Length: 246
Ligand code: NAI
Image 1: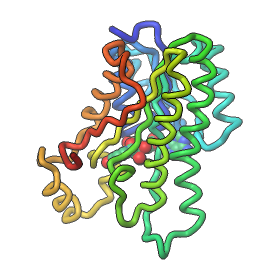
Image 2: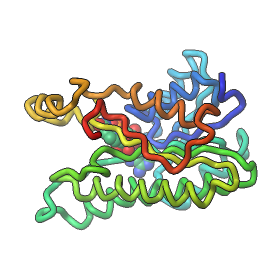
Image 3: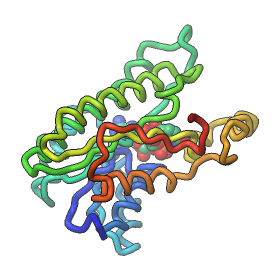
Image 4: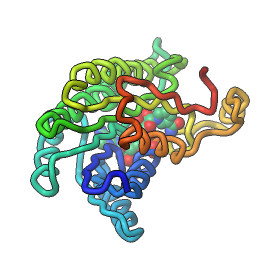
């Protein structure tokens, strides 16, 4: 129970990778707060975690809304304690080729995936600096490293997260705060279930471990990065992709 007495906020924690990360950190002993635009989903998921014997709560959070982000961080500090762990996991896609991409789809993806992580990271850093400890994990993506046709907005947001990770790692290291990124490959969630079967099969052909990842493959990595075992790791991008990118 390495995270006993710690409080962790997981953005986009209602489902998918975020929920599995929440389960892992709660299993490690943390109180987990699931922050999501989908409050109903987050509340249901928190209840499921509590029924499994974990400590969990849910909060309405649109990471792209600065006032709401501030209010959520203030209420976590007031209701529990200042935050120890932030996982910037909330993310969306609005795919399309550059030539056809609408400006609003560019803006929306950058606002949620990149600016949202900046806004949450800034609030978390304020509370962590006072405590002189903390860890932040940003969920990037393999396509932030490689690029991907049809995902200029998404891959730019995920590449931007890598820059944000390294910069915050440098700025916060002297306060004993680590900041790392996890870059998942293709993981079996709602986000990838929209892919046609033949596209999925093609993808799997490119993965040395010959399967899509599972949310738990990502959650286990995050659980390590926020634990004391990773105390000397900061500013890194950990690729969790079955060997798809080496
Ligand atoms: P998902 O679509 O299943 O879940 C995303 C969650 O984020 C949902 O609960 C949604 O309500 C929430 N959300 C959306 N906009 C939000 C906002 N503005 N504020 C707060 N919450 C918001 O997605 P999945 O697959 O679990 O992805 C989680 C993260 O992992 C995302 O950042 C995604 O880009 C990243 N990722 C996923 C991969 C995959 O293959 N599934 C691969 C690489 C990265």
